[in-house]
Image 1 (tube, rainbow, N blue to C red):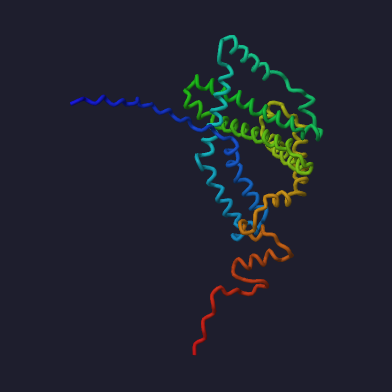
Image 2 (tube, rainbow, N blue to C red; image 1 turned 180 degrees about the vertical axis):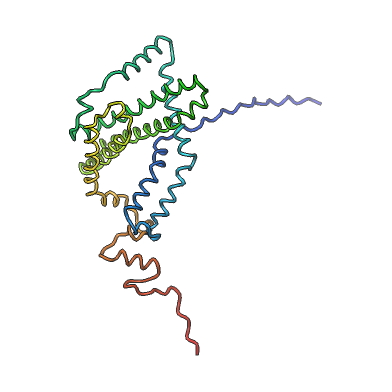
Length: 306
C-alpha cells in the first residue's frame, strides 16, 4: 500500500502586537472643557435654565460622563505628556557631540532675555496678533516641557521613576493642557486663514483671539518667565472684554448657524418664537395647558351615567 506524502504544514506566524492608539489632544481637550460652558449656560439663563423643560440641567449632567469616558481625562493627559517627553528625549540622542550641541542650543535659547519691546507692547494690533498669540502658546508649551523633563530627571535620581512621576503629576497635566490648547489654536487659525468670506473670517478671528487671550492671561507661566509684562497683561484683559462685546453682537447668528431643528432641541427657551409671550405658551403646553392657561384634556371625559 503506497504511503501518502506528508502534508506540508505552514509555519505559524507570530501575531504582531498591536500598538495602542496615540493620544488625541483635541478630543481630550474638548472633554475637559465641556462642563464649564454647560454650567455657564445654565447659570446665564437664570430660572429658565433651571426649569426641567429646557433640559439644560440634564445636558450638564450628561457632560459629566465625558470626564471618564474611554478613560479618565487625567490619564489621557498623562499619555499626551508621555508622548511629548519621549519626543523631547529623542532630540538629545545620537553621538555625544550632537547631543551636547543640542543641549547647549536648548540652554542658550532659555537664557536669552525676551524682547522688552514685545513683552511691554500694549497696542491692540500687537496683543491680538495671530502670529504673536501662536508664538506665545508654543513658548508656554515648550517651557513647560523643558521644566518637566528637568524636574523628572532630577527627582528620578533622588527616588525612583514611579515616585518622581507622581510627584510631578500636576506639572505634567499642566504641560498636556498647554499642548492641547496650542494644537487647538493652530488648527483654529489655519481655518481662519482659509475662510474666503470677510464677515465670517472676522467672526472666526475674534473667537480664536478670545480663546488664546483668555488661556494665556489665566496661565501664570508666561508672567513668571517675564514673557508678559504687567502692562501687556492689563491690555490682554482689556481685549478679552472688548472681544466679548464684539461677539455678543453675533451670538444669535453663531448659534443659528448650527441649524438645530426644534424637534431635536425640544427646549422652550431655544425654540423659534414668532411673537412675544410664546415662550410661556410653550411652558404651559409642556405641562398640559394650552394658550391662555386653559387645561388641555389628553384623555376623553367619562360618559355621563343615567
